Length: 253
Image 1 (cartoon, helix red, strand yellow):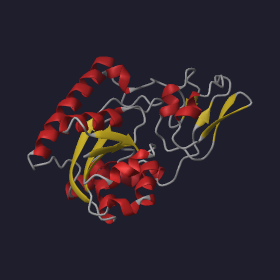
Image 2 (cartoon, rainbow, N blue to C red):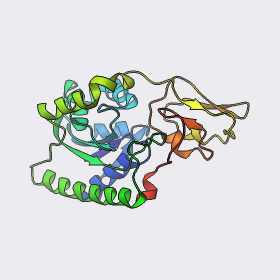
Image 3 (cartoon, rainbow, N blue to C red):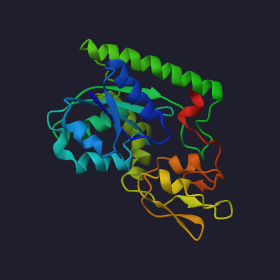
Image 4 (cartoon, rainbow, N blue to C red):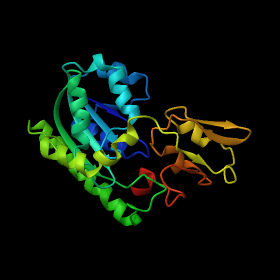
């Protein structure tokens, strides 16, 4: 087994690392940004994917990764872990269907409610203790799911027609277009920005740069919220107008 993930604030990374260690202590997890991931995928028959759902669909960066390396997935067994702030419908199933088009064999799925990472919206913000409880509950679900996978009866959350309808009518029909292309909506408050460069270092798309001692963004944002959550002066926003709470898995463990 090998774990493959894309993660914004660390939820998906934490989930897949725990899943892999519970399944086999020698199993490793790799970010899609890691050059070693492709070799690990080639050498493994079972791949566990973890990723945050966005509007009940797949982050653009992950969708591109799958299609750019479509020859890798033939005959691979895949288990999907979707992390979310509240609801996704078929968060696991939508990546499973994409991988299946390229010859993969989805064997199961797991949905994990985790602390919300959208730092500039109030909607899903919870007290610190509640977020800690969510992480504990997710850990228990992961352990139970690993046991079921080992027993040959994997969880199949997000898989099947009812989940698909829930995902489509719950969010994707109205907001799914937001992830079909990279976003140019990231905003920089130049009065607050101190040009520290942290956003540039964490961006998986190379979308941020420092020019004249200020951060500037381009049109290649994959909405992972890394930069917004790490900015020391809360100078960045994407969906909202101001930062409500900066998040990271480290706060809740």
